[in-house]
Image (tube, rainbow over all chains, first blue to last red; front, side, top):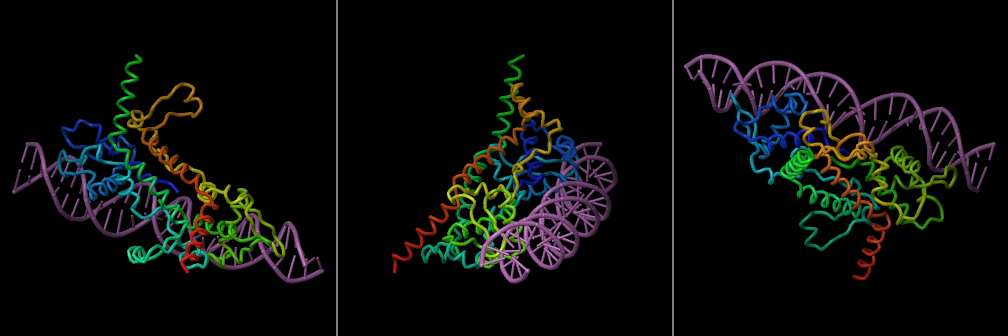
Amino acid sequence: MQFSKSTDYALHALIHLGQSEHPNNIGIKELSATLGVSESYLSKIMSKLRQDGIVRAVPGVNGGYELARPAEQITFLDVIQVIEGRQQLFECSNSNSRQHLLLAEEGTVRDQKRQGKCECLVAKVMNGAEQHLHQYLRERTIQSVLDEAFKRCDYEADKK
Amino acid sequence: MQFSKSTDYALHALIHLGQSEHPNNIGIKELSATLGVSESYLSKIMSKLRQDGIVRAVPGVNGGYELARPAEQITFLDVIQVIEGRQQLFECSNSNSRQHLLLAEEGTVRDQKRQGKCECLVAKVMNGAEQHLHQYLRERTIQSVLDEAFKRCDYEADKK
DNA sequence: TTATTGTGGATATCGTAGGTCCATTTTAAT
DNA sequence: ATTAAAATGGACCTACGATATCCACAATAA
């Protein structure tokens, strides 16, 4: 269970977009050179980010990418969900077994109608874990990383 | 990014071991029938759990598996780490790039000696997320699921 | 001693992460 | 209008791990 390299690339790319004073957009050449990834592969990732409204892209001479909204409105969760997809962290593959019946809660009739099935208690724990993780990742933004990087630069500068 | 089916199987198997009054051990036949998984595949998983000291196994007639320690001392994190491995949720694949230098904190000399390298700020966020997730999963045990299942059974019984 | 049960190795299949290449489209600059 | 620069999307490739099966072997209790 690991985040993909693509997620790593996406996060670093967005940080690069966020930290540049943008007179112009930033092309895939610069991004790929900065991150040390091939242009072709990074293109795919940037394309996904564009389709999901995280970045804007403009083709043509002096084209490139820029953040589609302020860096403090781009959360880690946003990025991860675009790249990794939105499937649940855990799915109970056991829903027909005898045991599952024991471990499933029925809920109210209204609940069952709403969600169509009852929930495995193992899945309940795991989904709770996922919600916690999401909450944490929602609170971290591209901007928050930039802020910390700047702080660190200042600190290093002061020492000299 | 998803937990594997094996993790699902392992958790359900452990719960089955935990809920049985154990005059005897429980064989792979019963487990695989309960979970709806093949004996051969579930064997592999149980083997892993045994190698990590989560269950005990005894071969021979009337052999089988039992929990190696009380169910309240087997956490979700224990099980997940056995099955999924202990690699980090996130690894920065970017440690040589120019950008990474900007985003890495130096730390004290002692820190650098201890961990061998400085840490990327993106990785720092992600590792923080992982620690949160681990904390949550450390607080949930096989027993906690059993407790909730029993509570539910009582509730259902009361209704009648 | 034998039937039963777990162990571990070899092997198979399949999907996906990671990556490349190229034709096409879009845009800005000239 | 033309052209060069840049992003886009499709086709394709490879390697690896998740999932799974089968079998020979070891260990144990009756």
